[in-house]
Image 1 (cartoon, rainbow, N blue to C red):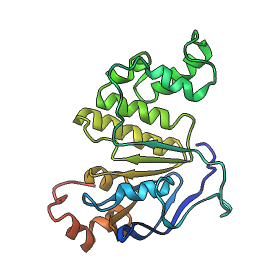
Image 2: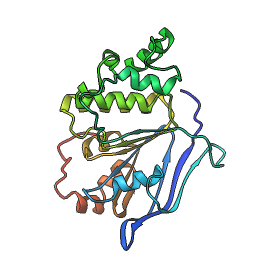
Image 3: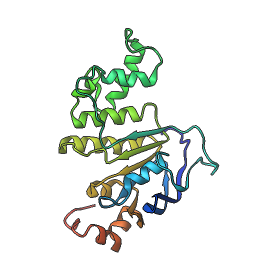
Image 4: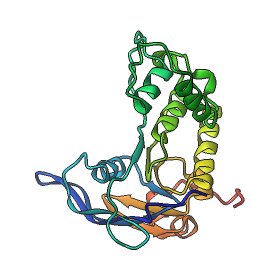
Length: 247
């Protein structure tokens, strides 16, 4: 396993408000390297708002701190981000290679491809069962294909923090299972902080190391077992039933 340059993401007393409308209030969370931290909650609970605050896209009070193993603030961090979806013009001529090559080289993509760059991108895409998509136009990718390509792009090169905002929305079951397998593989092989917003409670229950249940504020936090057994979880998800499932 590669050495970890980021030990912990600390979110302290994050509040986001627009005028008198408080979107999220006083949220605290620690997310550690090598772990999958899941944020769950009903629609409108503020999950995506929290992610945007972490990414610096929304003004907020409180602090978001990345610290190294020595506890000191870490600088120069790389953040990978996979959104719920990405709108791509179906008529765009840009291919998967074009998008990824633009991130790893300053060599103009309209010039003949360099074998070294092609080899590097193919090897990376192969890890995501997507090497066959190299020359496919972005607008022609299925939902599952696009999300795998976005995940591959977000981890090129390896980020310190990987943020996934409901990344399987609109993907069929087979594509969803493949995407989830890739996330689990990433967690086991790359020592980075992974934060996932998800409505798939079964996946979270079986795979998350830490869970944050929010409804504007923190309702419950801790291991998946602890959060799923809490009164807050039963209140927020009264119809959730895992009594017939193992694990």
